Amino acid sequence: MDKNNITILKIGGSVITDKSADDGAARVDEIKRIASEIAGFDGKLIIVHGAGSFGHPQVKRFDLTGKFDHTGSIITHMSVRKLNTMVVEALNSAGVNALPVHPMACTVSNNSRIESMFLEQIKKMLENDFVPVLHGDMVMDSELGTSVLSGDQIVPYLAIQMKASRIGIGSAEEGVLDNKGEVIPNISNENFEIIKEYLGGSANTDVTGGMLGKVLELLNLSEQSSSTSYIFNAGNSGNISDFLKGKNIGTAISGVKI
Ligand SMILES: Nc1ncnc2c1ncn2[C@@H]1O[C@H](COP(=O)(O)OP(=O)(O)OP(=O)(O)O)[C@@H](O)[C@H]1O
Ligand SMILES: [Mg+2]
Image 1 (tube, rainbow, N blue to C red):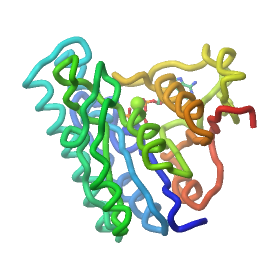
Image 2: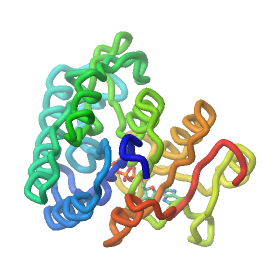
Image 3: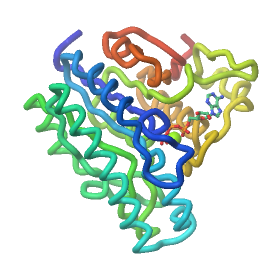
Image 4: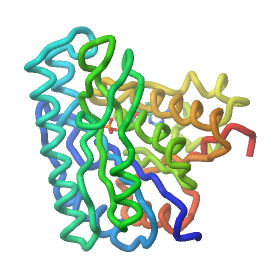
């Protein structure tokens, strides 16, 4: 693989936190395991992690998808920052030169969609062999005051802006599952209407659309670029390192039938 190719990996909050908790509960061992799998990768990498119980319950508690609230925005942002610090520290302990990038500090959304994100520091980090670590966050919003920004939206945005060549979203299921619980190998615009009925939100609190939200974001990405992205289980030991090695696992999402 060309050393200048950029890989974007999302680690689901469903894997690194206990999403059934009402308030931030980290899965420290999972964070450590994932950090050591990432440490085996030699290439340009951007990590985005989800908020899990450090973000979704807080957004719900303060009704932040329904109304603007100073206290709720601050509490939620400070909480996801805590999780981000844990992830960045674990990556550094494993030997990855990881640095935090907080969307609240570099992004403005419009009606919950990213309007602009300052990317210069991310570009410089990659040039200098750092691994930027972004996360689901509260961000300023030109219509709403603040809004929730899902990690699932950050991934396709960065994929386009940074011309990433490999995109993966690791979550807590083997891939996108059908009504029998089997992994759907490929999703494209051609079969989306049929499989749409199998896609739901989250089993736990998730304010950003769970699996359906993820698939819609990645289908939208495949329409805007020719990229294929993968949804796989980051909770299985070895899957992240397999994905980073170039193995295609889970469900592939692409614009054309593959
Ligand atoms: N067809 C489906 N296939 C797989 N998972 C599905 C499906 N429909 C709904 N889900 C749910 O989607 C969940 C994954 O989405 P969820 O938003 O909870 O995780 P995440 O995005 O990894 O976490 P976070 O948003 O904190 O980053 C699964 O755990 C499952 O409960
Ligand atoms: Mg989610």
